[in-house]
Length: 79
Length: 377
Image 1 (cartoon, rainbow over the protein chains, first blue to last red):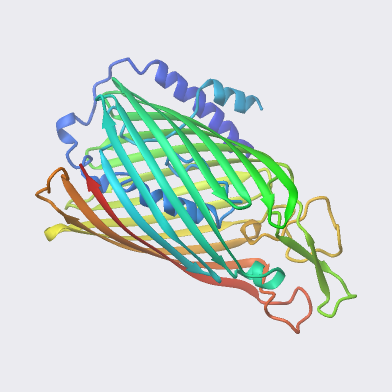
Image 2: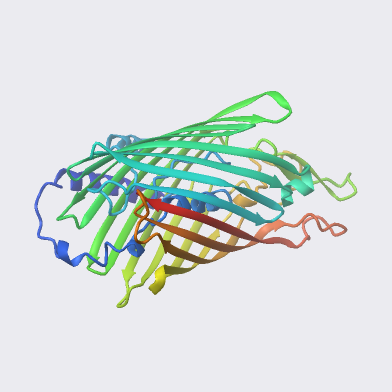
């Protein structure tokens, strides 16, 4: 897992760098008027937060793994 | 520790995939949940309300309850069935400035023998023509662990989460999300009631129990990738994979694939398959050779080698499509998850009359039901 840790550290540096240059302009290859499909609620990664938070809690309480589920997270104190 | 400092300096995580630049919608959700499996039933409500104000802020509040009635395999073999209740309250505030979104949150969780306080901070930004959303976040949690019937028992746990997320528009029909999360724990990490078993020829059944003992630190890393694809017709196909590892030597893989299909008349149906597998912690054993066999001892099935599969069926009905008074629209939703667990080194001790260590491996199924209504206003 050291490799994953290293990957995380490198990714964080990359993210900071990306944020630092975020003001730079780039020509979007998917135009705003082409994003109607992406804006459909069925394309949301988290369509119903109340449900996904509960589902995440169900898994976290019964599995050894945790994290990187794409939500806000924060822990439930349920060891 | 360098990694943690680096992460802190970078102000870590909180993913609000593809939503930076736009405040979350005003909505209210009322959910009732029910878990039934392995001798355990857990039920309760979850209420979530979110509202924008002053055009730049969005405030949210969540009230969640677990009413637990437990006669699990651990309980029936080493203790007595019990009931308990956990109440969790959360508040959050989002602030939008141009393409930046910041959010903070506080969560409190209370049980009669466990209190948890968590602080969250996150920041995200849309970049590259709004094709990419980068999110960083950090959480700090402090838990106080008690033990029923032992007023003198009190232990502390500190937990820190560092998250990084990137959401990327790849094509006009394809979204990609990548997440990384490091979690560090320090303090009392085991369950104050759970016991391990060891060979004891002096007893009729051939084994005895003693308290488990975990290390006081744990650090884990998880990385996941997810995609969502808009089909040639109005439907979505999605998949996710997560790789996990920690300093307790647990390794896990999670994979899921699902399909969302709306039809006319306001119905949306969903089906999903999820599979999970993990290897056991290096201090786990179903049966230790003798008492105090090593420094750290665990017989928690969540730390054993096992695999589980989940099949989900869901349906959602869009009601109030024309709006009603201040409500713009609403949905009523039903989701059923059927979970199947198969343990590879955790044995079913309800089976007696056989030599210790030859009992069958434990398996159980669980049904998880969610019924909720949502209103947008």
